[in-house]
Length: 420
Image (tube, rainbow, N blue to C red):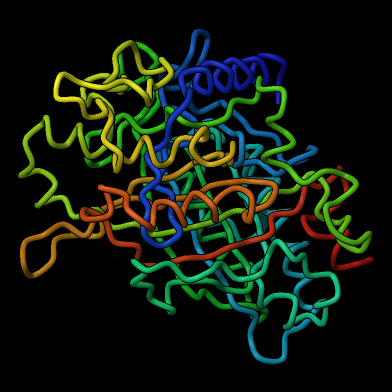
């Protein structure tokens, strides 16, 4: 990556994260806080705005943390889980992660995947491609590493609104792919699938999208498929406690045997279907009451701009709270949840029109935290008890994955776990 590319990526990250402020759309119900998207999608000053500049943006594969966590939101995405095949264990898993890491490194640098490259993205640059790898609860059983499985990876509790499809949940290995070009993203998906070979098979796979960089006249927080500004509540890298909330520290938590997670994070992944037909029949004022924010600009109903702090004590002329007691923004606010924080970085999805004419569309919710028992779980439990938005969403799949820290030069992702 050139110094120019690094500066572009740095400015883009700081500009987009800066647009995200203080209250979340945490789509409650089953463990998916459909809270606001992690990093807004508009480019900041100096960010790539067209053609070659957009294509040349590269994300580093090596580093303290894996790519795809604080990487600015990307236009195209794929998330998928693999299961190790019968007979495959720790040795096969290590060889697979070694292959995957080398392929990801090459593709993220804008190089061909290797000798078997398909040529799908032959004439494109890296287009901000990021690839992220994680381990599910079952991975440790399959590889004989249960003694090194973190307590934070224990299965999520059941939530009353869960309507989960087990075939589209969990999995031994998890992969997240993001890029600002659809062909580049698909190229990575196909290359990693081929690399899996005889070691693993796809358990489930989902496709997502966001607004493309440069689509708006000025940088702004993204919108979800309900039309709501979605990304206001995210913690920002500039926050003094950002690393503590999002990344696992070098010294724990947990036994020394879990030190392989240093610099890593835990990803909660939820497929949250939005019931768009009933939602779109609501009057604008009612939609805003459900969320607790203005649809036009994301500002709280108590006034100000998107980043203005909500006045949860303000009463209207009728003596009732201006932001209703069951409004999504109120219930999911960090101040209402003991400061619980997660970094939301979702993709929208659309999987066609059903026989009844209703769109199968919504959010591939992905959130990051140092400990899901202190981040996602307490917020989701509270949403589960009375979020007005729950009537208009359905949680259909779920997964929790331990995402180790970024590899050092010469390492592959997960090496410190698999070769200790």
